[in-house]
Length: 183
Image 1 (cartoon, rainbow, N blue to C red):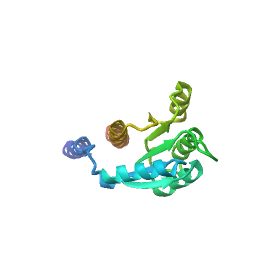
Image 2: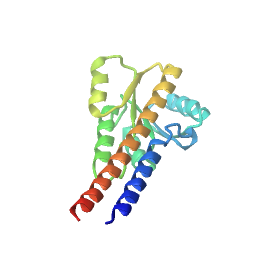
Image 3: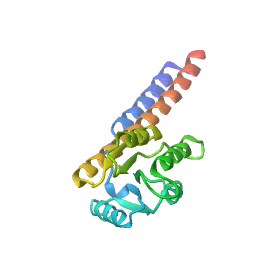
Image 4: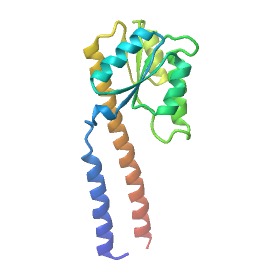
């Protein structure tokens, strides 16, 4: 490879990395899907209505089993997950969701999981974090705090995707560089 073609390749790759830097974390909310998993139908409806008013697309599930199935089917951008539910509790559901995304079945990173709990017991909160929850909020829900935590989790998820894309691009560049230096 000639010096000018090497320079062109490096410039092209630098341009791609700069494009990744310019991606905004302010994705329109209408493109963001929120999976709401809670056994309380009233809370599900309240959450769905409040989030729809803010422009989010909402999907609902009444328990952990249905939530896990919906998660696999709709690939949400974020999950609001009640800690205590029949059949499959929120902590176990969180673990199952994490396991699904860590397997090769899912082609993307796990969406953030915001655990909702009526319990202020720190052991439940610790279990939620150990299971892979990104954050938590206690019931009764303080709506401004929920909206801030939801937005923060979504913004962090966008950054996580950008880091993964940049890492993949760097690995690709390293392979190209190794080929160039070997010739």
